[in-house]
Length: 601
Image (cartoon, rainbow, N blue to C red; front, side, top):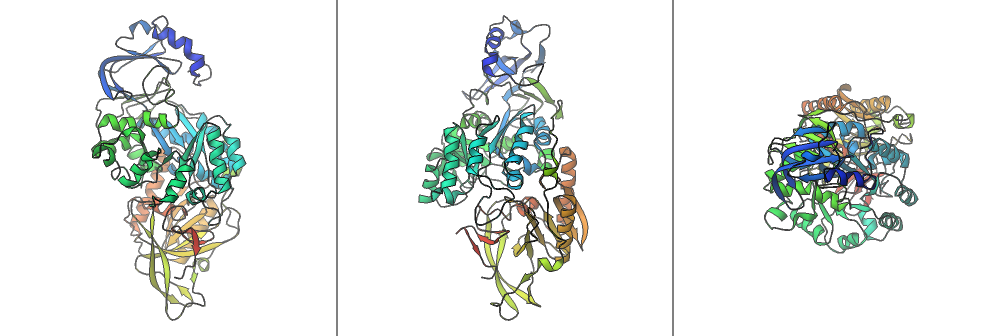
């Protein structure tokens, strides 16, 4: 670490000093004494080990670092605790925490996360390449390693949705030359890749030509020719696997299987049996979060939570730690830089008294003491977010209850209509394509029982457009509406409710405050999380955002919704690249066939 700039020096610039410290001829900046070394290269624990650090990198790991201790060397006594490599999140979206990179880093550092590979495709859909640059800029300022993947698909499915700012293949190629860009974000347009779409293949080729990693996203159970075509297209990993068979299929084809435990995605238990029961080599299995909201980060943890969960699912603790450290680093070609406590690597170390429960007692990142006993000890610098990022919600007009009416067309007959209904699946990203016979009153199709109205409100260009449909699974009672400008992936505004006037009131409220999430009942506000940056993020501390988000959770429960992480389910209802049925600004989308369908069956 350069003491003048606070920036990590490259290994090349530090090489000579590392040699001197390792030889005991020069003092280290930091020494950790008498710990149990968790070695992820050999999958063993070695007691009585010291670690000497210089320039933010590991210089020496061995039985006695005494010769490397000088008068100004900081000494941390491990006292026999386990010395674990800092944890790595191999695939995630910062925006899902409702925080900027600085806020996210501040939230996860005390949990032992020292490296993040994040794909800012949420902000890319709102602000385009400039949004990616802003996320990258703030990421580079953080005291941990935050690598940015250049988003690949904005819109995620051309022709099925309209995004705020499309990403072009030229912009992808340009970004590959930026500092801090580690590869291509998840390639969600898997039908395009399998069909040989020119732009999708060009983006992958530009990434591979730059020697960087292509993130995958194959959200289909079909493991036939389309799957093989997608793999041949160049994607290096996939986090959309939900079953053991799917995970094994990826690894057999040379992909990394990223098993996720986020706030709403519980996909580890169903796949880790490939290791725990079938005994497959775990090197290409990787742990990640994908999406974690602020409440999860503050109250439950981050990658430490994922590792504990893997252990609880029967995984050997050392294997679980490998999947959250060296496996991730190797996947991105950074195993000489990250992922283990070995000479030359960034000095990212957790001290923990229990390898199975993994309490995170001390965190060292890039050779600096950054957290202790859950308390953050360093600053996480922020950039000055421009006005363009703070004025991204443009509805174009004041909405009324009439805008949220699903009109019966001339094809409808009698007092009812058979319509498509999006069926929410708890703790899963996919939905079900359901149908229902719903009553018609005064030419308007009404919901019933557990079937609510859903609307997608255009919010990027102020067209005033509203697409209406129906959704089941939330269990709302009374005159309720929930609105959010977090609406993966094009991030228009999703409004779900039982009462059209309340839906209009909620939508107009978010338009007035510049975006966020809000719950209304009887056309009155119950709870709101303001997200003024791109309608996706807040620059408040994670604890304050989490408290406001908890207000949303409570308000949704008070309105009858008992789904686990219901807000995450809400925010994904427009994700037109995950089956089976979704809503977009262009209409109702059948994702099994990748085409728009009429609301009426």
